[in-house]
Length: 314
Image (cartoon, rainbow, N blue to C red):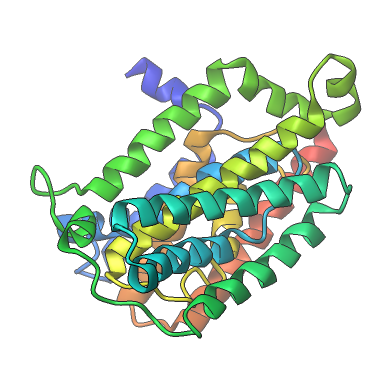
């Protein structure tokens, strides 16, 4: 229990906010506080959570990745395209899709590190390019008819509540937490986010590390695309549209600083569930996606404002 408390140390305010959100929606909607709905929220958070793990590392080094939603769609459509049009077994097609997402992330990292483009510009360009490619592969059409084993990853529940896609998210979250908290590579990210020049002088290969971080973000976005494909039982070129906003929001709400050097996996997970609970609760209360977007935007502004105030106090 003590370790669990220490794990979320520094996230008390955010965690309390999550509890208050749950209490609020439970009071105003009788369908919210049900096991089935909580399972549904967890399922909805899986794709967002996997991408948020990569975004956490990107933001810790002081970067930003606006292309995660488009890379998700690119990996999804590449997988479906090579499977349907070229007859590649779906297992290998999935690996190809993840590989393409990884390469897209690596290109982001190289543009930022070696061409010294602002991360905002580099990843914005990738957002447009990846989305365009996702539509070009299938002429903007959806792909259906995947084998049953793919959809079973999302549909079949083990122990009555949990599916394989959720287990994948939990596994990746644990690995990410260990790497960021207890490994030298993780500490290097915080050093880069704190001061790149000091990190370079201390012997850290800042450029290579930056490329690796964006590459991992691309890999996780590609994997998230396959998890979403399992949920939808279809390849959808419009999938992941504006997801980058929710991903960034989850990481920032969780306490990561857009200035770099601050962030953690437990904080990000709390932020992911805040976004998931907000969207689920507002949906159950009958609010449109447009209103949900306005609420999420307001939460982002509030979280960034708090981060700015904290930085002024330091």
